[in-house]
Image (cartoon, rainbow, N blue to C red):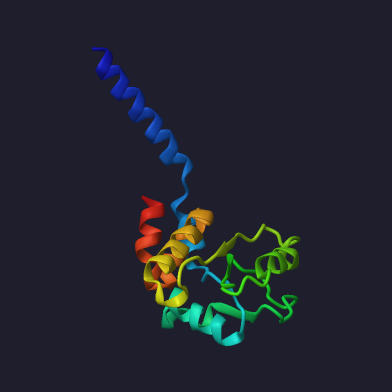
Length: 155
């Protein structure tokens, strides 16, 4: 008898949560294309990382910058991805440039062997959607290479 009451209470809790979730809001959020700031030691490094991270579909959704370029005209981005294999302090510079962004922009550093390291690229995708859980459906919708990471986050 106690187990049945526990199941009923669990079902009531689940229904209360489902009532609070607005599927319309989730759909609208998923329709907004995600934008990423990709920072590399050079513009070419940033371009290569952007292509590896987002695929061809992400060419128009990424803002590419070299470490020594200005971050003033970046606009709203969902995350900043930093590739600094020479350890020039790019992460600190990007964090300083974006510190007043609202909402706060998550900074993700790529570790490993760079764009050739498929496992490192997948870890970056997972980290991006983990830090932007409410944007995971948008990443999965707009960027097919993000779908496995987005599905893991949503589920």
